[in-house]
Amino acid sequence: MRSTSTAEADAPAVGAGAPAARRRGGHTWPGLAFVGPYLPFLVAFGVLPMLYALWLAFTDDAGGWAGFRNFTRTIGDYRFLPAFGHVLLYTGVWLGSLVVLVVGLTLLLHGRANRVSSAFRFLFYIPGALAGASSVLVWLFMLDPTVSPGSFLVRNVFGSHLFVESIAPGKLPFIFAMIAFWTGAGGWIVIMYGALNTIPQELEDAARIDGAGPVTIALRIKLPLIRKWIAYMVILSFATGTQLFVEPQLVNQASLGLVPDTWSANQLAFQLAFRYADFNAAAAVSVDLLAIGLIAAALIVTRTGLFRTDD
Amino acid sequence: MRLAARGLRFLILAAFAAFFVVPVAWLILAPTKSDEALVTGDPLAFGGFDRLVLAWQHLDAFSDHLYRLWIGNSLLYAVSATAIVLVTGIPAGYGLAFGRFPGRRLVLSLTLVVMIMPAAALVLPIFLELNSVHLIGNALSVILPFAFYPFGVYLAYIYYATAVPRELLDAARIDGCGEWSTFRHVALPLAKPVVALVLFFSFVADWNNFFLPYTVLADSKQYPIQVGLSDLLSSTPSFNPAVGGGGQQVNIFRPELALATLLAVVPVAVVFLLSQRALVRGLVGGGVKE
Image (spheres, one colour):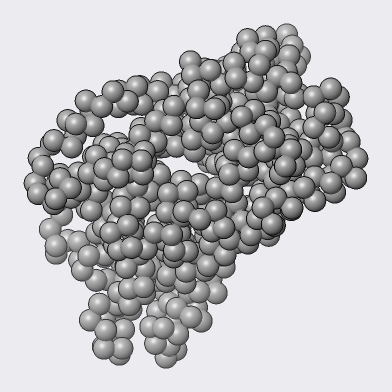
């Protein structure tokens, strides 16, 4: 931890700007007025919801202290472990495909002529416009062997001749992973490609002169230099993946209840709040999920060095 | 050998391009065909404009122009929230970059953590909070949480901290500008590219959000389009044979559902095109010529 005095010295007071403003405008703390209007939003929708969820998770419906009872109660719920199991399997499949395919495709693209590469990047990015419910609807069509342009693949790779077979519970983690990959991979490829472009050309040239082929350059030089972006993608996607909600919720509606409405952890929290009005239990599951999100965010900030919080 | 490697590379890229683009192409073509033609015909053939008009008439007639209402709601929520995001977020980024006040690093760290945390993790806690102050079912219960967009603040902060030199602001102060007019006449005009970025990302995030409005709104007349689509999905027999006769009554079949999905994407595409120049230029370029 830095002491206050060094923090003061590090603060972005260049020249006489800040003290001069203090004297002239009579401000004791320059800048605070500009941040002021944002603070209520940060508190009301960033900090307070977390604290309130924590409070609910550790109290009972009468407001008394409940210790960890809400947590043990929800973990003991017969739907809890399957929900987290589904979500973890889905996240695992998604992460695997993201790392292998996004990095692979980016490296393939980076070796190409610029115009070809940017055309491909644009094509890969298009599905990014269809997030949320839209993407799920598109894939419900794609997985329906009667109308899908890829019905050959749906029948032979997924082995489904009827729509309901496509969304059989055992296949769902893979299908959701595919949908998430379809909408999000293009954006990541654009980011990774941008990161690769910061690698100086001389480095590549030097390697080539030393006799390195394109594969060696890709694996030995390019890959290590985008490592922190890959780490960022993995941690962020892990945290996002665990929060899955829209996809299973829509598939539940399209499946006549074949897929339970507590398929994912967030759905379970949602049902606890809405169907059972058990806000304490819902808060406990939410806190489990919040913890995953917070730990991931903390890891990204402290470990990848991609975001700056000081000057 | 090298030729073979290049051919293989192109094949792999083309196969993935097909995976990404074909579903979108299908979605664009589907509303031009009848439900029957979707099953029997070539999936990637064009039908006719008359079918497209018919599909729109069916969709528009659904529940007394409910679809238009959903689009209108989405616009209302996304536009008003994004306006608040710009008004609060750009000055906040500026204040965090150049200000010096106690708690500055705390605000910055909190912003960063909430920004990186998946938005869905906060939805139920926000619902529980709004529920305790009886705001559930109110349009504000969507707009106000949307109006908190830490990523926008962080973008503005990074822009000001890296691309705008402090000397420029000092020069303005020496010329007699106060704190506010320095921001208004010097810092704000410099931030045009970042305003476009924040506008784009905030609008798209709000437009595509499903979980929060789904949780805090109860009346289908208040739904934004993303939640409306799920409503539509449950009233079509295409995926829900139980609806059966209901589908006949509401005339919502696969072409109508595809059109509804397609139209829901149009505003995002429009905003993308409008802010594209700024997006491409990104955060390069600042206040000082090298």
